[in-house]
Length: 354
Image 1 (cartoon, rainbow, N blue to C red):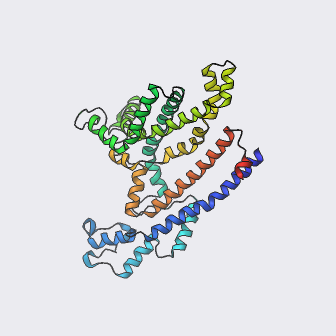
Image 2: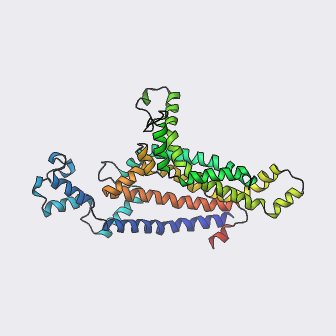
Image 3: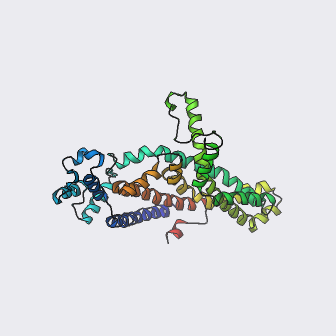
């Protein structure tokens, strides 16, 4: 078992290398053909006299008012952003830095990409982790209950409610809740924006916790309501499939009560598809952000950072964050496969490997 596991993990780790290179190469090639790159944007700003004709220290001496920029100055800008080198050389240098976990520096934020991502993590972690916990703690018990009471009024009503929630976009629900409960046209119950209040540092610790949780209520509801349907129905269908199998009939025939049959015999097998998706969902919860939710509730997280980086053609942030997310995604998939084999003894690493 350990031999096959080690062999399987080693092969998967080796396969991650070409996969990661392929993802980065495709994205890098696409960025080379996108118009309005960082150099073009800076040239437009310099020729337009942005900010009263003043520019940052990194480009001092380049601005010529409305006279435009000559080729020598444009070459200096290309050298500043590294575009004076051939594309293959830039890609090689970028990947060489990335394997040392140096994601480079942002063109527009005057920060390293890693520091920039870390500064945005509190918002994304808050949204992701609380959403993850709420969804799993709600959907799994609800899905089990629906499977046990399949076809009853409870099953029909709960299915209707979660499907309605699934059909409502999160950003629409967010706007509606702000209007109703965020001091819009009706009730001023929850704060409008931010992760904490402006005077958060002055509050005692217990009020800081309350203030933080109070700020998270509306964003968490808006980001999770649409997620209930998928996991709930997956749990229900998985339990229904197991309940109808022969070993359940045998357990009942032996005189075991329904609770014992359900939680001692059915539960482990039925939870396999849910648990195997747990590693990926848990890691994604930390590093994914919802652009619209963050925008509506004025939360400066990774979702907003990614969107602004694409608009500004901030390639170090775009490619650096993609590199980081891709590694996490590949390891999450590996953990999911390993957990599947460990949970289900019928699956062996040697069969998975083939």
